[in-house]
Length: 112
Length: 114
Image 1 (cartoon, each protein chain N blue to C red):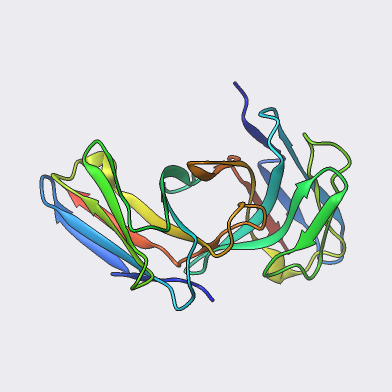
Image 2 (tube, rainbow over the protein chains, first blue to last red; image 1 turned 180 degrees about the vertical axis):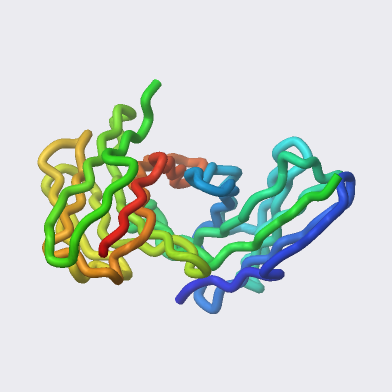
């Protein structure tokens, strides 16, 4: 079951904040977040493991609510370089051997 | 530091032709996988491998074949190319530790089947 990402697209002015959500109907072991720019490979941002943790990476942070099977990615004081498509990838069993199931992506456009 | 290397980067095939997308990683990762990316669909898992000699099917395996004779290499074969296989293909390798399973992608291979 493919996780559902929302919103599908966001247009922001530089300096504004954004939240991207990723929901699963199946119990999750972990959620991975990636950013992809046009014509390039997805770039790893962070992993969140079950247990309801939150992580931060400069002005980009994320949370994982195990009860809701939902993860949210927070981008604060957005910069032009944050533009791209954000994907969440979900993993149901631990160990990481059998790949990820990705959402369809959220397009983020940052305008000056 | 090469990471995950894919070749070719671009390829045009005629319907019915066969070809192999090459993937090599130099990070000694146990796990390798192939994804395809189509507009509006996200990345979908084709095949994956948990180690040399072991492969398994992902979400969309039909029309593709893989093998893993070494830890480093994980080629993807298109047996008889069809226009529906026009896509961008990403090879990935990963390892699992206490922090989770970190996946690294290659730069992608753009395939067009005419």
